[in-house]
Length: 594
Image 1 (spheres, helix red, strand yellow):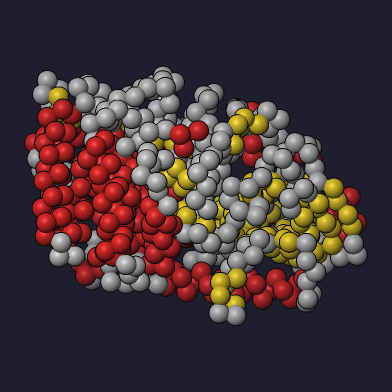
Image 2 (cartoon, one colour):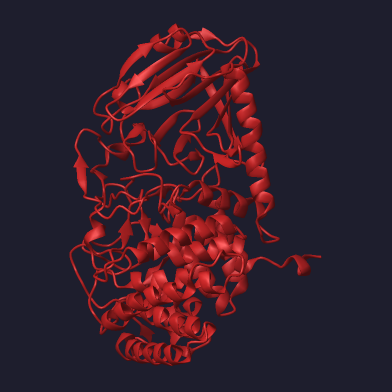
């Protein structure tokens, strides 16, 4: 049965998910949102060639163990049989500096070697096309196999017997073998020599990248793994960062809460920038900001859509793939995301919040700040116009609209940050204007979102429902953490949305009552507890969340609060960002530690 006990490999160009038995079950090529070459995660890979998978099968397998090499995205899986025979599989996607530029080809490299005895293996390589509907046409050479698809041709080059691979013949692994799957190009050196050079250079790249991070004293390993995962979810060509590498992993068993997350959401932007800034991952942050500022530059002044493709694609038309049964048979499998057509008024403030970094961070190569400020003022005017208008909200409700408090708070934040930017640029009149707008939006939001009978802010104006996003008010600067109104809101949210040690995002939506908690919301709750002085409780819940990560140290979007099983698209950028930000807040400082 499929599970999310998966590891992520990639190179900021594409990614792949590998299960605990060294089977690649998901990978879109040549980029994150492409047709998946391997898609058995959403189908049945056992005996089903159209499922799309790549397996190194050890006969008589009884035991397996998996880990990343220290501070890298290079994955090692050990497989053992009952007789003590064992093999090691090393998986990675090359990434290193070459000829003065970053070399990140569309290439999966697998190195296999015997560890003990005479292990007998079988290589099963079943790429797919059209979301698993058919298999590509294959051709065979003396040292390679080609897989021909309408928009992509892949070549597997190997020093293993090609006939054994093509015909799936079991054989004894006597010496190390290498497999490189990538573009339909001949290699200029032996496949083994290339793989050895690539793995050495890739490990060196990741080790050097990690050395440049700013990390907390506590939970270093966990933060480093989250940081590497965040980097792997960045599409370096444009700077976009995807919400997750998958589509259609259900938020809970037996629901139709299945969405395609291989895109870039504006709502995530501020929190992602915040995490990257705290990590000191300046180049990645700058690239991401470049992606966002390009969206602003191309904006026509109308409704700002909440989600874009990784190369700024605006149309993300949603369709259902009928021939894939879905994760554990729980369809539908969706490609594209209709949320791009929604009205989400928090997006304007999110863009301004994220872009504020450009004006104050001296590490960033500054663009024409006057021109950028003028563009952001246009975004801010939309915040002024829409702060009290109904929308689909942060959680993208598909069949209902309201004036969502979080959207209004983000509209306030946009005005507030524009005032600060204007002051920084010496634009006194504009600073005064935006400060006045911010105060007007803030007063109106407080008046209409506060429920005196409940003693809390609520999900929407005039409403009575809780919402986990209300916990972000102090972090955004909207209200102080020690303000009695926030203390009341925190009490209301934890009473209504906490289940065990985990937090739900809201009480209900058009699909009914949610079944699983939302991982980023649990991190928001942890941060809120720390802000009001409940530090030990926050630390205990944070440790609990770390225990909920899978064996590779990764988190998905959702979590069953009872069984602790991961659900939802994977790995979830929002969740990894939440882990990073909470760790930074809660850790003892390096100075205090010594």
